[in-house]
Image (cartoon, rainbow, N blue to C red; front, top):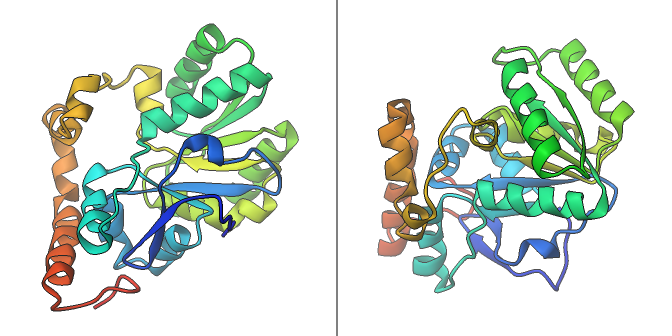
Length: 252
């Protein structure tokens, strides 16, 4: 993990959560990873050691699901700055547009990637964009990884936006970051569908009211499948606040 005394991080459940402005994340080589933490991803990581390692060892672990921030507030008496997926994507794509940078979108379908490329060309004309849709399978084999790495490295992007849903995207970026000819590998999952127009963006008011999750669940009932993992986070938080158990490493 990249370490810097100038960056504010809040330790929660053995995770060092980035709590600072996004401009503190540099675009420099070697490639660093940016992952997100939410109640859902925390819950998934408790039974997936590879995913847990990807979160613990991420160079920058940003707060996406704002309710995970309750852990920082209740356990550390610190407010963790939220850097949600859409905001993070907007910040970095604008940065690339200002510097005539290069972005690679890895994940999703060919149709979604086509929409992303078309929209980026209109709204961020100074960004050179390339895309690749990997096979839709639970686990990539060595040949899949080789092709993805070859496509990315031949293009030489400043940023690789990885959109393969959690925990697949975080694990892939973590596993291959030392092989990537890029400056950042940012796992942003659902942002691909949002930017492509497949999913209507949640109005800023709902995010301000901390109810973005409710609107997304109403629109996409399949999100209900995540609730067991989300409830596990709140259960662990309750036990930690009560002093019944400690989760220094995310385990009881």
